[in-house]
Image (tube, rainbow, N blue to C red; front, top):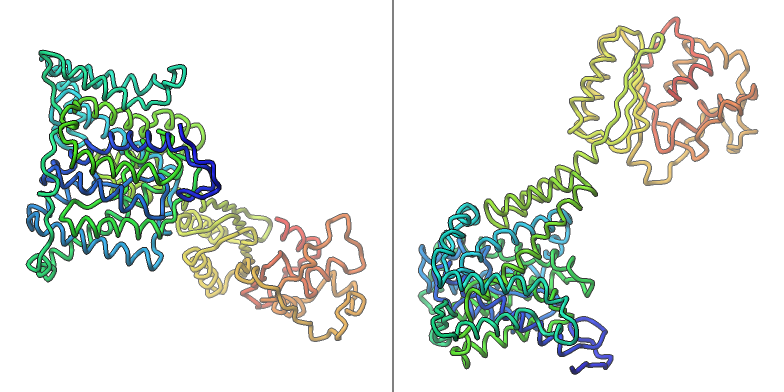
Length: 609
């Protein structure tokens, strides 16, 4: 086994390249990619050779470019329905122009750096996406595993599986094919336990060799791969096809291909990055690389391509570390399709289907669901929704629904609001803490109605503990205050956090009676009489003077055991420092209120709640 021990970087890593591992990994990816290329092409209503051409471009063009190190590209099952509709509506000759223009648009999107926005994706969505790809892959490949054709959609494949099992073992030849496929799956699971250097040979290669030998036995008639002339299937678009871009339906198809192909590739990149600890994907560069690949596919008249999870996960599981393995897989596709089609004709389809069933199980990761349930049940719900929607619809729809579910979960968790209301003497109090958003507006409205109907002469709304107050909640509170003030029957106090002001250094405004020296010693100390029983007029002036006063870092005021008759508590409440860090005191009703004589102790209790 040859190892490169130089310091040269390969595929974005600074480590030496194990050429043996890279070559064997590329062969494994080749065996996984070959049936996928053919199957996607046939399901799309196009010749099988066009799928192989897209796989070759995904290896040789995208594989050699920077972006992702281990992600493998080729024709994707997620675009099958769209390609089939496009071919039926516009013809196969028009497909090349649509793919070509989509590739150019992808390059443009990458150049304006829109690829990075796909990094904002929850791990629950990623794991749900992998499971949503793996489960349908297993059931769809269980049919060719027994030399049968899959019914169609993922739901149809799952529902038809019991009848498929009964039909398989009612025929000797299909039973032989199924046993070959099952043996491939079992071998893939147990091969790592084989002792000695034999374990370094990929299980897929061993399974293919066994399958070729069994297929060559007398009396065995299992289906094998059939590949036609690769060069004859190339269709360069001409002037007539480019003239079709004037059709709005064609332009719509171009835009649709661009969005879906870009989203699938970059969502897959996020998933593949979680499978290994190597270099992370450069999203903008990867989007440009995908665009370059689709541009070449369009020129050759081939199928559109995206990054594919099944091939990428096989590449990671085979031990690849650099871009060399994914590039070589494209070379194997090209070489075998051009030079050795007779060798491909010896490989049983059931063996390749068994390789894909094993890959689907690894993607599904059944152990991830109970693990996520134990760690975070909310994320478990997001993961399950993503998986279910992908199985029921398609990859892009499932990911978008999963992202929406993740956003809703995050919004609910960020809207943790505590609202308490109570009546103390002549005051109805409402104390709110946490994040007050529109999601908690019904709770806020109920609390406001409760304090409004308490019948007390004074209402105090304390929002000092609120860390976020959105426009909906703030508007509701201010409307409530204005309505109560307009009624002329109740006095309203509102204590709001000055959230924007918390980010800047507050400016202190000196009191009119203060001098240039703002030290505590230089401030005049009110007399004990004025502090203990202020008149309504003086209290009104004091409260109005407190409005919108910035907060001093000297807050909080003294604790109860620190209070004395020296006026420290008075200074804390009536000096330049006002209640709460980065807060403003809004006293919205400055009318004198006869009979309400708050002492220092009462104000302290009211503020501390």
